[in-house]
Length: 183
Image (cartoon, rainbow, N blue to C red; front, side, top):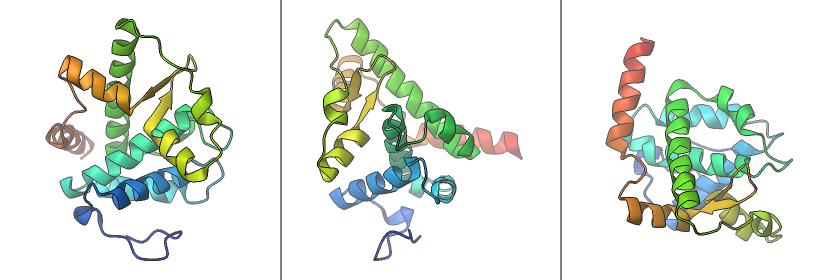
């Protein structure tokens, strides 16, 4: 698959591994898809939907959707809202979107109930360095209260509760059920 903003062809989803380059690529794709005025948002999300047809594409597609969710959670004018993105998703992407939201909501509930105060997202939203901003904005999400959840919270949750984001096998089962019901 080729993305118009990339100078070199990218690897197909089946060949994507969790390398720093792949993580950066996912962040870049998500950043463009989340932008309010980006002309290719629908096409980017459609590529994610296509990647979810085969388990080999799940990792990249889920990573991009999670990064998009984190970006749109911040309520910044430059990004679409979650309500703007949700109707643009195909059925497979919608399942992933809901699964990711459910997981992060579980982390937020656990965090609120464990008694440690959360921090405001304001400091990460004020970062001016473009690379640092991309990293922080895609790895943290802003709650409606203005507080932030980040990767460190997810790791603490997973260690304390023993629950993590459902494995791709669970995702495959959910997508398989959705595929049968839409046939």
